[in-house]
Length: 459
Image (cartoon, rainbow, N blue to C red; front, side, top):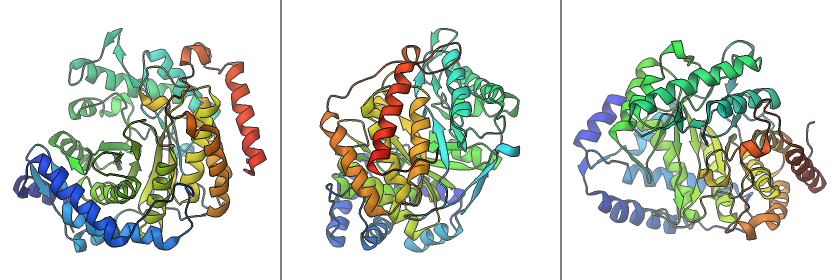
């Protein structure tokens, strides 16, 4: 079976190739060819297909595609390649369950299938959204743990300052910010009475390997039962910084998650290519990083959102392809166009969560307003998303498709010019963390609308 040392050797000795040639002559050209061969076509009018053969075709296309294009290492300008037998061998050996957390807060992430009654894993929080102060980070994490009792794991925000000074990439401030993020998040979970909850985005503030390593010391609060993410570069690329993270985390023996965002409208082309690439990224993460869990977020190049009809289709077919053909532990991660405390934001969350759950994966609650604004985050959105996920568990794809189509009519025409909503300081009491009356009114209104559409909330 392929080892991490094999990966490093291939990064150093693989086929040399200029990056632009890889993008255009290898990745894009082969992707178009594979899509034609498998006759893969998107139907945006039905964002949740019920055609099992479509999902299986996309999986087979991705398997062939990845075996031919591999992963590009930008530091060596070489291609790391694996043959189909190596890919299949790794898929068989990949973990089918991982336990995160400690004590009564521990839980086990397991694979799901389309229309599965198996309870989804609920990884909730800010999705690494930028916040301006330690106080906001603390209150957010504490609120997630208190307000979302079904939460299996927490994702923290990312600090943008240390003692009022803006964090610079690869500077001592980034290292200090990474350490503080861990210390503050763990203390917030203790205050909420859920000290054993895992932090699955490890260190949201760490944007470099050195900052990640700086926050890993157990004295700061991270545990082997937390989750540790490594990003992939678009498309199907890596570099030494990410491989350095893998080298360190594999040596420690912690559960690595591969996170990747194929871009619809870029080298992936349209939704068909984005779907095949999303599946291929799972293969890359499993082999290159030896990852045990996966966090895809297919994204629109122009809108920086994943709630458009074509990307809902991508979300559904990638999830069905992975869940039907592997036991990989995949969690869908979303971006909304609208900001917090708006009806549109909750409509987007609902459409994306329903699509993911009925298609056979679990979720991480993602970022709002494209993740582009500081402090544009509240605990209401992840709480709502978790409730929608539980309510849609076990639903038939045909029924879910009808609900999502109705939700799309409520927001799709606004994606190009969405409401930004309000910042945390405007939505929540900075001392107590409690959302405002307006936030609750928006939440209750949209939740009732979903109930009227046929979604049965558990509480």
